[in-house]
Every structure is written in structure tokens, then in C-alpha cells.
Length: 283
Image (cartoon, rainbow, N blue to C red; front, top):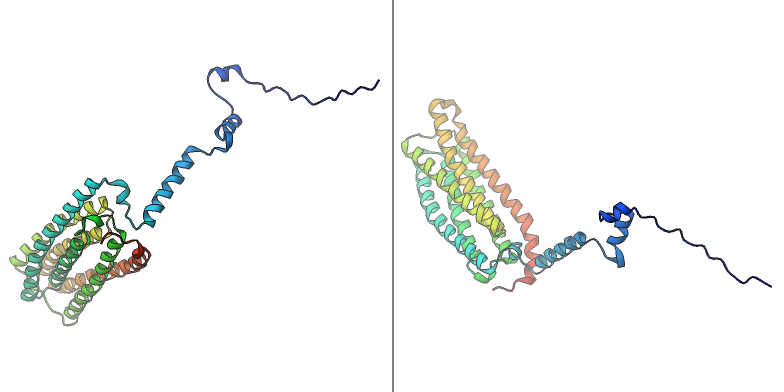
């Protein structure tokens, strides 16, 4: 009689350490298999992917990063603060610009002239920031932000040309600056005021993720540095008249810094204006 029984290989039973079971532990292979039961992925990878998708969707809708972090009432509160800081900056820097222009013509100071132009630029940049945040609904608008930055870049380049022209002219003609107490007082007040304004603009720009506000703050910071540079160059000239070129050299350096920043703004922001022009829905 033929034996029809078929023998199948019996799998060896898995040996599990009882102590590991009691302690709620398992081997690395078991961890790997359990973490992906049913084709499930690592939850941390899923969170990262979801965060990237949210960021891409926000940027794709023409919004700034601040739209993800700030509640509506918080965004409006910071917007109002940005408007207040811009108005204060316009009034203060306009007064400083008039005083600095007076000093530059009376005392033949190239750095004072450079500061006067930078203060005028600060007025214009604050006006641009006012336009940027004049519309409450556009507080997170990337397109409006990039347009403001492009305008700032053009203004920066034009102002740097004037600063460079005046400084190079003074160096070529060996124009010697005149030093007095009026020059010192203007430089100290200008430097301190502009640095305070720069700190306020940097803080607001960081919260609102606003490149325009940060650029405005950079301009105020440059104005503060130039205000103190007037004091430094005048003090050096008082004790060493042979270093008469320091004043004009500082003017050239500041002009080149403003020029390079303006060019960088245009290079970075012009393509972004084109990318976000179809998403402007706030006007």
C-alpha cells in the first residue's frame, strides 16, 4: 500500500528571552518589523514630510513664513508697531539729514555728506515700509514684500552713486574737513539715534519675516556707523592732519557697501516678484 503522506518542513520555533518579554524589550530585528507593520512609515519622517508640504504650500500661495507662526491679531499688532517705527524713523532721520547736510557744506566733511544722504535714504526706505504695511490684509503678502525690496534696491544704488561721487571728489581735490563742537554733537546724536532705530527694525523684521524691514534696519545701522565715523575721522584729523583722507575714504567705503547691498537686493528679489505676481490677492 502506497504511503500518500506528504512531509512539510516544520519551521523552528522562535526562541524569545523571557526576561526581555518581562521588561517590554525586543530585538533590533523585531523593532524594525514592528515599526513598519502594514507598510507604515516612521512617524517622525511623516511629520517632517508634512511640515515640508505645509511650507511649500504656503510659499506656493504667495505668503511669507510669518503666516504660519503668527495668529491674525498678533500679525496686526506687529504691523501697527512697524508703522509706528517707520513714522518715527521718517521724522527723526529727516531732521538728522538736514543737520548733516548743513554740517557737510559748512565743514567740508565727506562722511557727513555721506551720512546726510544715508539719512535721506532712510527716510525713503521708511516710506516704502509704510506702503508695504499700509494694507492690513497684505501683512503676509510675499509679492508686496518683494516689490518693496526691489524699490529699496534701486534707491540704494542711486544713493550710493551720489555718496561715492562726493567722496571721490573730496579725495581728488584734497578737501580738508573743519572740526568743531557742532560736528561732534551731530555725529553723536545721529549715531545713537540710528542704532536704536536699527535694533527696533531688526526685531520687527525678524518677527514678521520681512526683508523690507530688515533692509530698512540695515540702512539705519549704516547711518549709525556713519554718524560715529564722522566723530572718528574728525578726531583723527584734529590730532593728525596728515590723515586728511580718512574722511573721504570712509565715505567711499560706505558708498560701496550700500551699492553692493542694493545690487544684491535686485538680484535676489526681481525673480521672486515674477514668481509671486500671480498670487497677489490682497489689493
